[in-house]
Length: 365
Image: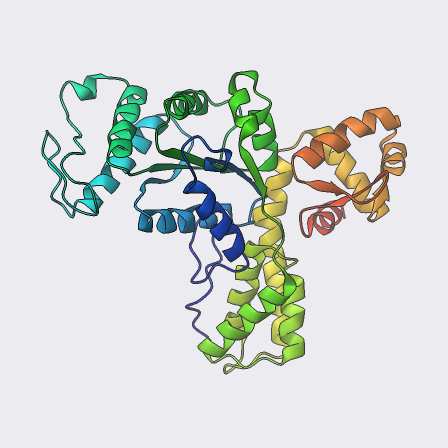
């Protein structure tokens, strides 16, 4: 069955954003608050497959409609500041409807009256930081804002240090500028603990929670109906529960359910195959990648958890590792900060990444 709804690939934008409408509205409202407000600097934390990138793209679309020039989601890499500047300049040209003169002309569209001037030559010789400040000054003078979106935040990155330093100066100057950055919990934690970037500790922190099962089920019903896929409500609810609230797993389950449906009808057998394939892909794409970024001793802690079952006490994990409780507590904290596990009551922990325990057990068989 042809699937034109689901997009099970990292970075792809699904046809509909499930379960994030309220959060997006809150972020949109905050980004329109007065310049310098805490709500204008946001750090989004989420594990792989939690929908961080999709959230940023949706936010970009919404804020453009509010008259912001937006540097669409930019990955941390060499030349990041230049890329951000190019994207903002492109948006200024977009607002001008193609009528922006880059060497001293004027703009007459969407309220940019007489003058966002993006001069080349002498201006190009200046640092990207200074050119970014100059552009944001012009936008502010025209009662317009600039929004910078950063995806895949990297810890201890010189590019991030340069950006945050420049952004802090612009905030201090009262410019109409906002910054939203998204990353894995571990990378975000390290960045926030960077003494040079203490300014970020005042930013609003947003953790992406799992999707509500009811919202997932409603989306599946609407999507399968639109595709002409017949599925009993009980099977559909089983598919919804299997996603464990993961946006990426939702896309996988929806896609494979459509793919394996026979003559447009989902059977118990075809759904079981769809769920098995979805779980395999998720473990390969998310679980294996999560483990690859951890230390050997981090993985030892997780393997002990997987064998003991969850929730489990840190004391029991320490015994299984052949370590002291104090020693195990260090790894407990690291893994919680990294969003891999979560507190599950006094002295207990549980996995925070779906299917990670199963993945650990399978690879040790």
